[in-house]
Length: 397
Image (cartoon, rainbow, N blue to C red; front, side):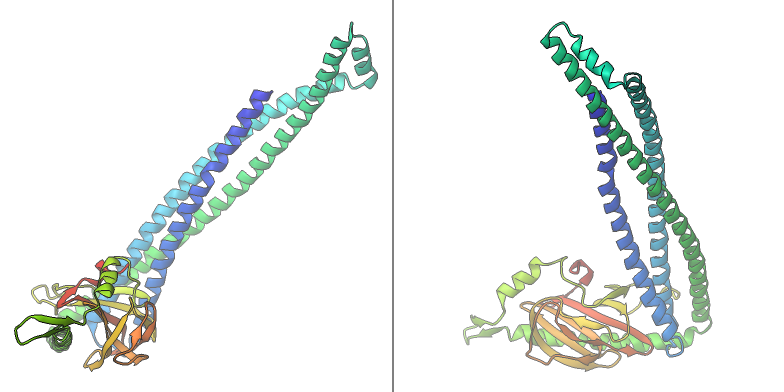
């Protein structure tokens, strides 16, 4: 009986051991899905609210293709979650089957004890059994046996109740898992339908771009001029800032330096861990690439990233630093330039700005709010190391 109790305890412990890991995986999946759904929502809201304002088919195509990419990720995540639930359901069914077998065994054993107790239920018989002992030692052993018999009955009853309660909880959990899996499958079907609609929209935009190539090439040329003007302006600001960082003597030797080396080192040590300046989704990445429809046409080189976000979203400093300049650029509205020792960050396409040149700022401090320009609501963000532009996605967490 003691061995049986130990086996039961180990069995129940094993059942409980898998619960925290499963819960942890589920939370991780739910968090990832929530992030994807939020990003899809941001793009969807912008496509809806700005449809009448924006005549830029390329911008719309970029948004829709990003939405398609996110939707595919969401469907893939749902598939992983459904697979995980299917495995959990199968495992739960196996545990329920094992518990049912264990309960049958315990009930059989308990039944035997009850029957034995029933046959000797008369207390007089128990007393006579003790009094008929040949000596005190035997009487004591018989009394101990009867006490142990009573305790064993109580212990067996507790075990039966424990397994029965666990079995009931497992059955409830199984039912809940099946409901969740059913809801996920229904949501996946809806997501697939939305994906098809988004793919149709993308194809219509491609057709539009093909038909009106001359008009959209003019838009592209105008956009290229805006990008090149911004890049020149930023490069010039950095050149002046880095040139004034050191004062030279007539002999050509460095007399003093105003670069905050400590701040530079702290910034560099946080590579890959800097917070994002705005909550949204990246719709234009660093570097140069070809036009998605006119394959032989190169798009303007992007010295940063474009993050599509909600209207008037707050823009925050990614690290401690000092505002170098606040400028206004065609196509980008207001831009805030922040220096972090020998590193620089740039926040463009702002409608309102909360800081001025020379202000000290802290990580997470709101610099301003995103503007909607030409039907697009997005932040253009750049990060430079000295005079070299960096891919911000390598620096942001």
